[in-house]
Image 1: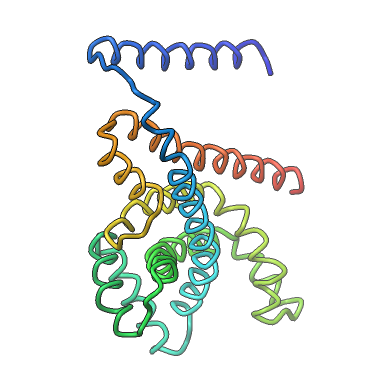
Image 2: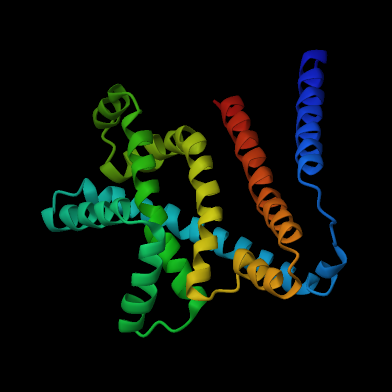
Length: 246
């Protein structure tokens, strides 16, 4: 790491520390972190549940998003229209509205009583619509010459996607996928309307009992950063590795 990068990091840290100290000076507050000690295990459980929900929803969103993309490209018009209507509904509806409708009405109609399963399904439905568009952008960025070359060599449609298109798509979609994953993690906070004891809902309960609202929100912010910052670093690492392979 060269001197310019080190200087940039140092100045950034200095700015952030100065900003925090300025806010604390302008709005003084007697912090009481001891009130959080009694709820440490509850907070950790909520944090772990948020991580689990995020990973599970991400896994299924990547799969269902790809299925949605292929449905939109299908020659069977029923599949195509179902996928398009589904995507438009997800795009045009706030996640909070979807959480309430899908859990209290749709999930109940199908007899899904487990809140964790319902939460994963809701997050998957919402995020897969966006991920399907990310897939579309990544696939359409592949030069047409590669599609034509696959036909010349007698590749089937499956072989073309499996050996030529999808390996390149994965590399192309990493940057936009990073932002979508961060949104997915933060979207779990809206599951509190389902009374799911994820990180946000847990911290709201702790705040109500301790009245240490500022401390609680600081813990909440740091918790989400603990999830999103390593995730962003991992994506950047994968980008570099894939460029090296390329």
